[in-house]
Amino acid sequence: MDPLSALSVAAAVVQFVDFGSHLLLDTAEHYKSTTGQNSRNVELSTISERLLLLATDVESLSGKMRKPRQGSAAERLKTLCGDCKSVNAEMQLTLAKLQASGASKLDLAKNSFVVALKGVLSDGKLRGLKERMDKIRRDMTMPTLVCLWYNDNLISPLLSEIANILGLGKKPKSRGKLFINFCSSKAP
Image (cartoon, rainbow, N blue to C red):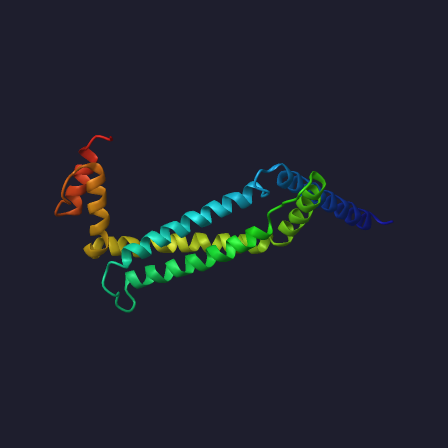
């Protein structure tokens, strides 16, 4: 056997051993987990749920404003909230398929192995969904700031609620005064 062929075979063996060890480690993590998911999937689920909560809060606040005009930051924000909901639904559906369960320890071990294998196969899809969530999160920043800056109707209910929680009484006339009052007040 020539040296190049031997190197190729050795590389294939190393790659197979690496794949097998990652698969076994992931199987063990699923098996030992109380939720039946590995830590990466739990983290993805948490991030997805938090982004969904943010989108829901933004939509509920934007529901109190008048209808946004075409191409406005408020319209872009509403579109991003819809995108966030669809990505979250897809993420949760994918993660639900990657959850090990079993009536006995043997069933759980077999199911953990199957789920770990499915996880390897769906890794690209999960990575793509996470990238889409990150993009939505980044894209929400500017429209949110524009809405807060230019549309007092969007932020007024939130400012009133913050003022009431902090015990500042009525909402100050300007955002600057609320910020100054917030910074100068003592935490309860």
